[in-house]
Length: 142
Image (cartoon, rainbow, N blue to C red; front, side, top):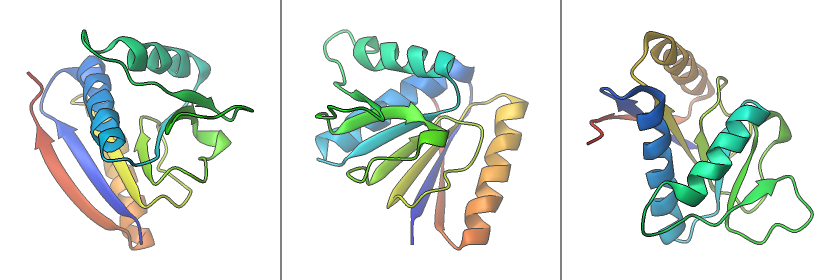
């Protein structure tokens, strides 16, 4: 059974959501997890790709785009429709739909806007109905 952590941002909108997602990727990577970041479209894919390289002044998160022929990084980034690599055991969902594939851990980062909260509630209900283990965390980005 998968474990899903919902990170509910108190403020900050999409920039705060993306910053927290990068922090979660970094933390999971340091713990030697295979990490996959899921997004909805090419524009979001390009923006997240750039952010993983530049979000911190003193480091970056090396990653590969999924699917690809030469995946060497333990962090991958791809469209929700493309599934996840076998090596990924942590999925960070930045998309509009709940993760449909098996992943041991799922992180749902929910921005503070009303539409993001509504989507987060739908994702929560989907995972609950699957019987997945759910937890929520209130987060204040500083």
